[in-house]
Image (cartoon, rainbow, N blue to C red; front, side, top):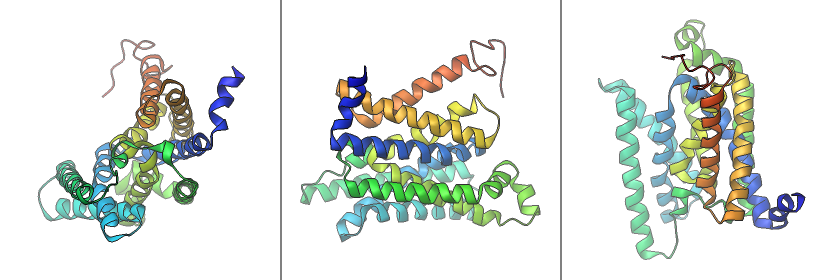
Amino acid sequence: MWDILIEPLQSGFMQRAIVTAVLVGIVCASVGSYLMVQRLALLGDAISHSVLPGLAIAFIIGADLFLGAFIAGIFSTVVITWIRTRSPIKEDAAMGIVFSAFFALGITLITIVQKDNKIDLNHFLFGNILSVSQEDVRNTAIIAGIVLAIVVLLYKELMYYTFDPLGAKAAGLPTNLLDFGLMILIALTIVASLQAVGVILVLAMLIIPGATAYLLVKRLHQMMILGSAIGVVASISGMYLSYFFNLPSGPAIVLVAFGLFMLAFLFSPTQGVLTHPGSKFS
């Protein structure tokens, strides 16, 4: 048993991959908890799909890929806000319009880039955590550290804004700045997760661990801590499954996270389908 646990850690690429996966599991669950509570899962989806054009453009001009992805993610949130505030179109529709357009543009640009360059940018769609370098691990750790530091420093303000935006505005909190700051945190989290699970699966890591914790605990800080633990367990377990069964790493991590969610969904002491079969939730 001990040999099974130790064997993958003897390879440098697995060590880097597991460290990256753990960081992604923690930061995704921490930021994703706010999305869960605010019912803004589609926002995470919109930003994650919107980073693709930034990746392609950054490659074309020779800039840092992750900086390009971050700028594109922020720009997409600005466009969403612009459409929502300057037209009668609701926020969910604005998100759908922007993320589908940005995603289509990203796929188009990547296709054009790959015609003239022998480079595979598709790993940003599905993740390629086994190829992370020492520099990638460092960059992910820096981004995760920045995001978690902001979450801790602004925890009370973000919690107040999350649960009662009107009350937060009446209390004098800069709600527009907090809203934009949360979008920046989401964009940073997505950039940190690109190598691990890719833009298509990053929404799963943003939502599933937090949703699992949501079924088990009541308070936001408990949800963030438990969600982070679930994200770490899913990340490590997915990496081991990937190693021993030759599975794609990103999907393996997400499937483990989904399995943990189903356990909570069925057996949660307070909200489980099987433990409370007669309960209905609105």
